[in-house]
Length: 495
Image (tube, rainbow, N blue to C red):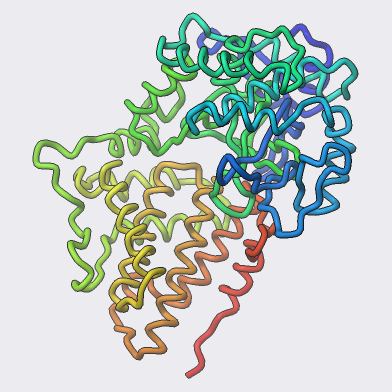
């Protein structure tokens, strides 16, 4: 790369950028990274928290945590809100000192109200990037991000017309409110939208799978290519985008992130990557004959003209719960893998478990049926007094979802860990409710509904989330993952 500062940062983190005949460039490791190691950590060029609604801010401007009732504000602009004094102080010293009073956030809010809700994050990101790029004196990390921004490709000529039409409407609103917002930049808003639209990231809570904010981090976009089965993922913590290794990475291995959900069928992923990011995916999951690629082919199958539902899917919750053997085998493999940490034979074992299953039992369509079953059971449990069968079916459907996750995602991806934790809690609550009502059939142990399974799933979640999330962090009103695991692992029944 032409930037000395970017090259220095890349080398400092044990990385090297190489030319690639297919991808143009790729970033490889020049030292070994162990699972859970930090590969790269940098503040985004611009970031902002997700909003519960457009009328009120609901998350901390620094860490994206949900705001408490008593929330500190910046003493100068009186607009930026925080979850704690510590976040307020850290945000000021890291970036807010050069941002404060440079833009009227209320004017941005007013501009957003002229757009449909789905377009408002794009306006906020565009305005924030334009403002940040106009600052004169900035810290070293921001100089690196701004240099990386200029190296990104807009792909303006490749965007479909309906997207450009949306961007034109957003740009019109920005230009109308430019003086009110405080923008004196002459940047082309459509160019900024094109560049950021295919290079932004969504941030998620470090202790749960809920979206918490939006990031524009050009350096990470520039360096790390996509893979549908990546060896790295990022977590947003304390204003930093932290890229971590999901598996052991050897010298010469390419570092990759997932730009989209790898659970989607292959043809859907390929179309979306081509339409949004303007490249054809050639990762090992999409091409080749590896065990994971073969599992992906099975997941991408259509149900056929008869459209049969999964064999064990309940038509009502009166019938006793049942589970297919492959689900329990896959979960046992995941538990064993996350206990000893070795990957040997894991991918082939997954293929052996699901290779002979028909599409009605193993496909993306089958997964969506089980996900809907899980959500329906959870809704019933939260809204009314339900039978033990409904609770048991909630556990079974959660185990199906976990088994599908284990088959398509990297084992140490946070989403797998959070599903492990959710399943553990469901099984425990079901066992407690059944113990209190004296309705605990012996057959439930065969379904994996046992105290031992509760503890194994909880510890598995802990091992996964220590790699790809921040299990010690707690959101407002929630227990941290570490606390939840400690509670679940210490449970017992008194005879």
